[in-house]
Length: 552
Image 1 (cartoon, one colour):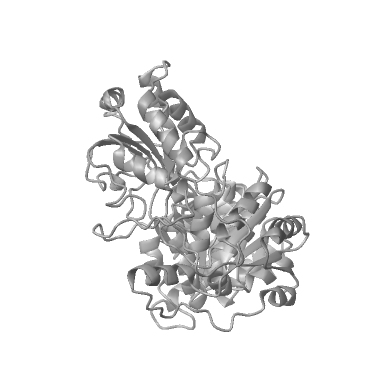
Image 2 (spheres, helix red, strand yellow):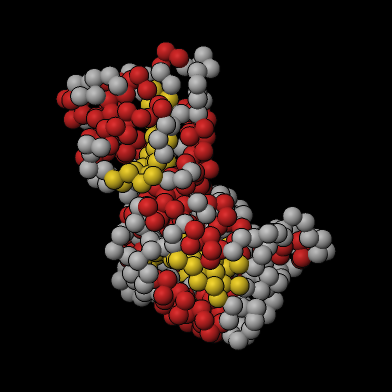
């Protein structure tokens, strides 16, 4: 069996049905083998988007996404997408072509040290210098990318090795990966802390994505208010009465205030990052029960803590069992949380022109259901979506968090559509982010992967403009997107549909039409460039929170 055949056979055996990639000389043998494989290949227009599509596929389907690029520039173009997946703990197999093993280090055509380049942004990196080691690399990579804290794994494939033969029996040999350690020794103390606290708060992060059922059981057992990170959207349904919404830099005021008032935070799969937990929403005095599979995340919050190192499902189950079945309750605290939630929403001017982004989110909410997956780009559009969209299910809101990658939204949506073809997929993006990856409109058409693109066009880099307005005395620099294209005509040029919206009463029907369209449709909505996403928590603790008028 040739190395190329072994590679695809092992991926097929693990349920891989799609690879996102771009061919080149060092991987052309793999592309030749794909003609005889059941794996679908999605030809992207830029390798960065192959990684983003594999990322969106993985988040939507809850299995590793696979991307493939040639050596040299093909590999380096993957870097941003792989780093995005690594930052957000997304399982991925990144396959890169490489020059012949004997030519390594000689400056051969399109040679780059991919092994060293990608090591800091992957869980593990392999270079197959002996074709008999290929099955071992694939088998281990598949396990490693999904075990513990998920993330991308890289396999570098020298072109000469992939053309060699290996014994098919090697494909069936077991390759064990050492199981991760667990530590639930603090469980008894955690129970005591919960029973003895007065103002508990549950913080849900992306590490709880596969534990939605257990999180809800714990929430209802304790009656504690729940807040989430950007990565934790949908784990607790937006409609749950004790869901206080997102915490963080642009979180809801209710979540921010409750976080600062709590005396115990039960954190499930959250990293306590600087964008989630800052000086402004930090507990004044309190403790933390921190559930996480990755012990390197413990202790970043500076509070007295009990750390439970385990998979979220296992840890929560153990905690619920130890607490017993009798519901707990803190009536005064719960009443306070409900009042904060009911008092904090201020309805924006729905008839305003230029259109307020809040209105766009309200119209999207009127159309959302369990059959629609939403992806976002990065910037104001992302924060509007996080702040206002009513996400009811996990894996229905996909966004670049820690790495904050502009250009993520469209390719991630295409990847999610490939993963879940029976669902409708919508991306919310801005005119800045879309122009970084706009060529992938062609991919969506060529591969029959239709998505809805809700483009909030304000003619600026909105988040940069907002920061310069509030923190730099309105000294606006490099934030005006001069000479923006006619996005409707550009969409048509890519054989997509385009709809232009300037009035609030046009939004809903335009988006509905796009969702029902058999081809990718760009809905360009002209929004107010001076509308800020508020509140905004400055990184400097001496500067007060900017609250504004139109917010939760």
